[in-house]
Image (cartoon, chains in turn brown, green):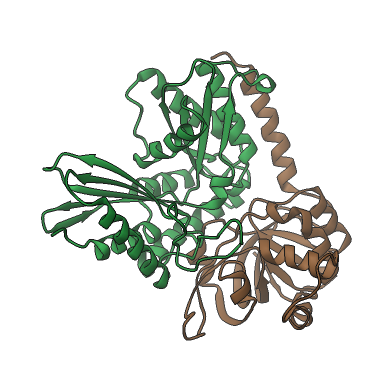
Length: 209
Length: 292
């Protein structure tokens, strides 16, 4: 299995192809529905004025996300009282909900990878080609196993405002297992499989009861 | 004076969140052999099983999405349901504090997470059913994650786009369509809960209730039992596979139930349950509490 360290170069990204199993190590950040909406409205489309610590957080996450990886994950975290945070359960959440934002977020922050589950659509695939970047598919539900790859919680942004599942957690991971399912060459394993299964379905629908 | 069951319910929550039922684990294990060695599908199943063992050993959630808590309480005549409700809610808040549960109740209007899994009167969801006074108190709990809940579907038959009429042949067509549309997004391999009839609300509720039974439990009506098995087989022919990586294991089991309907309506509701099919039961027999 190929091992890749974050930050990731464009050259490494272009060498990846849909179907490749990969292990990731390095620093990444979690972000899901609230984060994508906030990023898009406040910094990309600018339909909302920055408020509170928005600008300060923006400057800090820019450094983490440049050539970095964003993980669609709403973890279970222990140590909330003492702030000695530990990831207890941390599998991927369904990515398609971020389809309206993802390509813009990839381009804006120069993201090299997005981790989630279920795959994403045409707009994100285009974002993968242009940025360039890839979509990494993690094993949905394997939360206890994936939490063990988290070596350290380095920090958290917007914990109070977004809540535990939606906050931006900065984590250091080691050998985090994923499969590339959308690559920078415009290939999506998801659309291939969707088409193939649709043909099987059409055939099944013609069979008598 | 009615006994306080808060601690026992807390234990029920811990077990449900961290320990996958044996019938589900066995079925997942049996599926590994059907997938090609070295394939992403097989790798996914292997990781899933490692995860199941790890969660059980460490009392941590199997999946970080600890889901909608759905309680079915069968209480002996005379017991206070108001007190049981309070105890379930107290146990849920404590389970969240102990990280058995993720804070999962978000106010839909103000987008605020309550932080303790308690929200309004409906979170957690609790259904009470009275049994005879000499029967034990039985509390069933199912945790249903959001990813699989989102790919559930309801059809109003006839559905012309699928050529699905108001009969079992039509039911078969829409259920297969629901599995194809879900792809891997409901965390395949999934378990299908299907309800035929009812109104839109009762139909969805029944499609979840049917998921409280073990894998392999067939509907007593042979006609429906046959459809259950046929749907599992045909859904697996779609080739979606674990996580939508492609493969032979897309659906582990199908459970169908029927309801009465209005002459005008013919609903088919499909609740998709992810592989992290978390359901447990506690039975109170005198001073003893049994968990399974």
